[in-house]
Amino acid sequence: MTGVIELGTRSEQRLVRTLTDRVRRGHVIDTRHVGSSNTDNRLSADVVKRLALTDVVAAPGCVPALILSGVVITGSLDLRDANCPVPLSFENCVFEKRLDLDFARLASLSLRGSTVPSLSARGLDVLADLSCSEVQFGTVDLFGARIGGQLWLTRARTKAAHGWAFSAPSLEVRGGLYAQGFVADGGVNLWGAHIGASLELRRVTLTATDGVALRMSNVTVALDCDVSASTVRGGATMFGARVGGQLWLTETHAEATDEWALSAPNVNVGGGLYAHGFVAEGGVNLWGSRIGESVELTNAGLSAGGRVALRGGRSVVSGDVVLDGAVIDGVIDFTGAEITGRFTITECVLEPAGDDDITANLSDAKVGTVELGACRGDLGVDLRRSSVVSILDTPGAWPKVARLGQLRYESLSPFLPAQERLAWLRRDSASDHPQPYEQLAAHYRRAGLVRDARTVLLAKERARRRRLRPLARVWGHVQDVIVGYGYRPGRALAWLASLVAVVAVYFAYRNPLPVDEVSPSFNSVVYALDLVLPILDLRQEKAYVAHGAGLLVSWVAVLAGWVLASAVVAAITRAVSRD
Image 1 (spheres, rainbow, N blue to C red):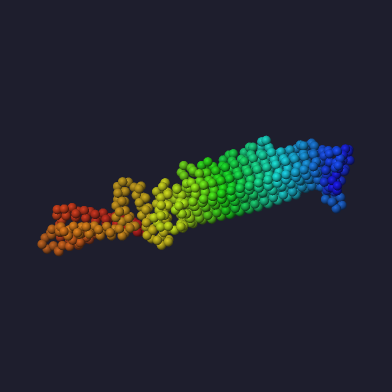
Image 2 (tube, rainbow, N blue to C red):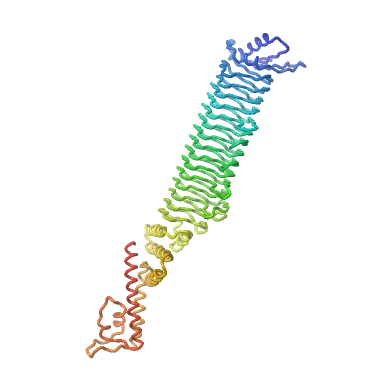
């Protein structure tokens, strides 16, 4: 029975002396009789307080400590402002009433396996570890507490009828906070906390009674923050939080009672945000965030009922943004973001987006690579005014809607003929801006494909024509038919040759009349050239005069010649000068 004390009915003075000796030796104190019918294991809070505050001298070869095991502590243990010289350990104890440690200074404290109806520890200063693993709490208040070692909450439980079940704003933990399997019925408040190592909230269940279930605004975590495989009913807020390592949300389920399931604007993560299988009922807000590596939301479920499901506007991501296999009900908004790596949305299940059918908004963004793969549902992408190094897509996976006005990019993959890529441009039915055509033409020019570039520029003129007034549209059709707005110069030669041939054949059979007897010999081909080309004077038109139906043919030839020449000069001069 070494290290176990058995107590019966004794005077308090003798009791304290006996227990003090056990404290000097660091022995476990168990007040139950072993092998006796008297199993009373109750100890008054006053006796415990006297033991905790006694400045004992260690027994030779021993480390003094107050270690209670399986004890029922009657009354309210009040250690406010106390300075306890020895470590305190309450293993599997039951506190009948409140435990008050406000502004106390402790060497260390363990409540492992105990039941505590209420813990008030505002301003508590613990030089070493604070262990609350497997504790059954009512409410916990650690506002402004300072923990010199680790804070352990593994498999602990807290419960509050209203307010926070675990409230620790401005908490300072020099080591890590470890709370695997923690349950908080009333939510957790860590606003402004400083964690010197890692923050682990794996497999926790947090339920809000008021507000959010997990409040981590302005939290600083030196290493990783792990909230994986957890349930957060009421959502979480991490506004302005700083995480030195990785932020893990893998397989976590967050349900919002307010706007966002996870609200983390201006969050700063030194590593990556990894949320494989993360489910956010209410959406995720990462506006203005800075992520040192990648944001991975593979197989995630983001639901916002048609509103913004993932808000990353003005964020800076040094790696990739990956949405492979995600189920998205709402809009992915990275307006004005800077993404060094890839923005990937492939094999997703897309619910109907907003009224403008945009699923992914990357307007005004700077992105290394935009990769758009096949998705179930209608994908809509807004790339207006964005700067992209490369775009990866396939015709079978093109977005139903693509906003491309003033989009700038360096390469498109796969490399497709111009006629196929024009179908991609036509996905932007809401814009009539010429810049997307000029950007695509520049893409082909860089590859040395001048003909494909001219095909795109011709399509630009045809698109522009739809915005003109009726008379201008007619003239546009004339330029298109005759010379393809100058991008089909061979077509002008064909029209010239055809017109000259028709006129020459006609006048070969119906010669015009000579003006006088000294007229040169008639040549129908030269005569046709003289009529059709207004800039030439081959002396045939002046030497011969058409008559009858030939007069009408000559007028038509002259008029057609002027129209053809004007179209050629206007279109070729404009288009070729830009080429």
